[in-house]
Image (cartoon, rainbow, N blue to C red; front, top):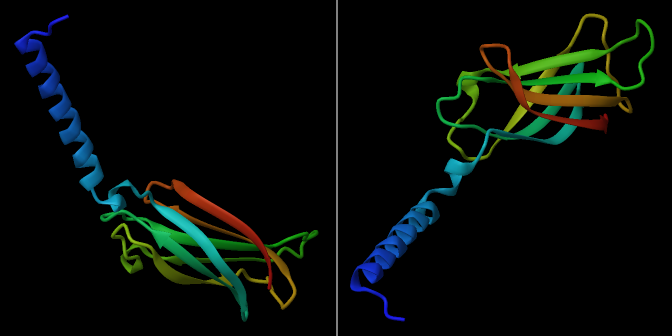
Amino acid sequence: MKTSRLGRRLAGTAAVAVMVGASALVAAPSAVAKANLLAIDKVSLHDPGVQVNVTYSCDPGMNHQLVANAAKVNQTGHDESVAAGTIKADKLACDYNSHAAKVTMRPAVGSHFAKGDKVKVTVFYFDNDGFSYARQETVAVL
């Protein structure tokens, strides 16, 4: 079976278009495909509260806060101990790269944390409309 000259040209043009598209995807920086990510690295006692080391990455222009919350595990009744902390948007380096941050959480009135306490720590991004995302949680012993 003979292929026509026009058929070969169309096939060649299609192959070139596919290769150009594929090379554009390969050449694009891998950071562009990176999402707003969070990872909890370490949780520690930071008298009187709790401190968490976080690795984060975020898109340029993002105007969100990084929020951390801690709560003692297995609390009963009125002896609930909680702590919270934030890093404001203007303190975050949002350039697609990974960065390290420490969030120091202050305890709520009446809350207390001590060495050996088991705590659940949650970190997330919080936007101006009240949405939270990229939530990460861990349980650690102080």
